[in-house]
Image (tube, rainbow, N blue to C red):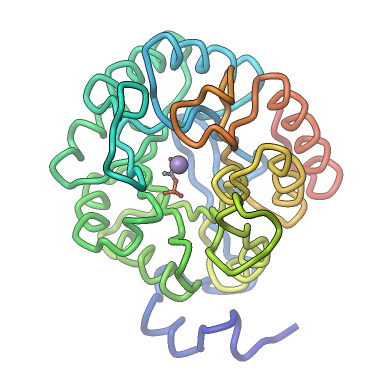
Length: 295
Ligand code: PEP
Ligand code: MN
């Protein structure tokens, strides 16, 4: 169906002049690129799995071993974390440089590539030493100097959508990265903030519709993060499966061996058993509907 105004808030003029590099050149235009041997936009749906925070050396080594064994393509986890409140305790504290070193060890030992967040320009060289993909967190989606500086490293970049941003603003942020000549850009939907009544503890609503909307206008791969979106473990499986069915090009999942004792957001991680079950179901959907695979 031809749509003169694809996307809710996007015009033909935007596609031509505001984000020409992000915009599809024709209906079949889709970016394909490889990161550490794993292809995005191709026949595999990459899965990123790991804890919210790189809490300790033991934890990250155990998670790396297990998510790799179960079928994840990338290990996720933040050493530098945008924590919502400034108060810290021994348990609730970023591990920063130390955490980056533990990620390095996990990557080497279990041969699993890493995606981790970079929050400040001054830490780009340090984070880039271990990250196969630099993650721009939702809160920094419109931190344009950070986007430009990350883009200049020519490392693959995943840009999480801010929970209050339109598709138009999100694509504008992605354009900043492509503008520097860096073509390995991944979009990640992680839930939007809307008034809703499902449950007082669920802070966000997974915008599944944006997967279809983004695909109308951009060639970039789009990953879904149902963990941050639902903030509630029992809802992660249905939303992960729905993401694959909706056409997501990959899924990010928070996985922790002891979810209730996760240092950050203990309501949302799934354990190894659940991860194993969900990844098999996502693989079934990918194979049957799209002739793609995860495992
Ligand atoms: C994360 O993925 O660790 C994270 C902090 O996500 P977001 O930026 O989407 O809140
Ligand atoms: Mn988080």
